[in-house]
Amino acid sequence: MKVRFNENQEIVDAIKEGLEKTGGYCPCRIERTEENKCMCKEFRDQIADPEFEGYCHCMLYYKSIED
Image (cartoon, rainbow, N blue to C red):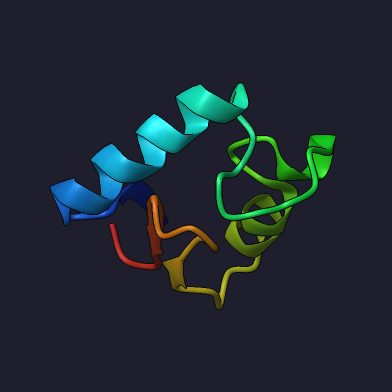
C-alpha cells in the first residue's frame, strides 16, 4: 500500500490553500468536525480497506494497492 499526493499539482495547491484557510479541515466539507480534519476519517477508513484504491474525497491524496 502507498499513499501519495495527487499527481495534478494544481489540485494539490488548491486543496492545500483551502486547508490553510479552514485551519486544516477539508475545504470540500461544510461541517468543521474532527472527522473532517485532514487526513479525514473517511479516507483513513478507506486506507484501512485492503481492497480500496483511489482518491480521498477532495482528491488531495491517492491510495494505491501496489507499492
